[in-house]
Image (cartoon, rainbow, N blue to C red):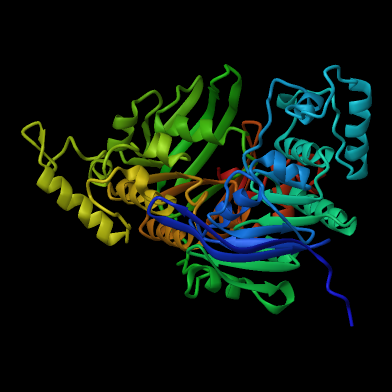
Length: 520
């Protein structure tokens, strides 16, 4: 009979209160030596709060924390690190203008006033070589790829002596190949006796990498299961309390007339560097065209240029045959293009305005909302309430600031406002980023509904599963160029993943463009 590994972390009856919210309700959680224990749950389920308590950022209102059987109080992340706990956040805590070495030692009080850089670099290289990271300590962070920056975060944590790692959505910025390599690193770490808490919304990854899985819902633990005793469908049902659709009802594509066309489009980013290097695309009504790519390869510049939010330095953009290059966002919207931007709070919504005021941002200059140059608030409220009911948006009060809504309900409101304009073209950038599985399911179904209604949908997402689930054609962007366009029937994860990494030369028979690429 196999002996159960020792428990090195135990959270007992942890409760945490915020004004009006019970974020954690008597939560029990344990982590064993040498295991990967995944924490699953919808937005607001209490996962981040629980991990922030373990990392010393929050203190529990009730309950105890035990490390190696000893009760501890973690008042700060420094206390957590002294107990061997390190958290690697989804958004990296690195200073881009500093070197790898400088980032690794930044904030370590135990380091002497005079730092022996040669000795420190040797320690960094030792960790890098052990896990085959290939990181040069002298390079500045901005010189590294996103995947390499993540490795620096791991090095920084291990350099400080962590043997318990908390990983928050670690594969969100990685290609499929990078994710697979990352999983091999995690398995090597657990083989050395390190223990990992893995937070992810990608159920296929959870089933691939986990030993045990704990599911939270509304601040409580629903259950803890062994990987071999469960399935993606069971985990999803535990998360939301109902069955979740893992496939969408997609009618056969009825490709209509050309709706959006880009000819050799070029544009610069905010640093004055050319971010789009001659992008050409053609999207027809009734199809979803997915843009796959690792973050930072020009996706944001591309979508902003199409929506009129960024000037184009070269090339042309056509909407239903009309040249819209250089037109204002309002003019482009009136011609039939609507935009779901990547940042719902900074670009899509006005946080301090109410749900009603945000709902009418596209139509406040037109009847019936606008009458005699004034807003008719009765009509505006009626319009907003219709959207709220139709899209099942949970709003505490109509006059409450929209920033008080959950991420999923914000995204629903934003999405409802855009599609209510009955667009010819819908540009959706990361439409399900940061959403729980229930809200994600809803948004994806609505995107397919728009496609089935004849809308040309340009979907830009870093979630490759989402791209493959929704797209009729896929274009892969790398360093501001579309490397290839393919029909969904001829696409596969390996091919798309290699293109996302810019490794076009490793693909066989790439000399001839695919039929889909010739059409584009």
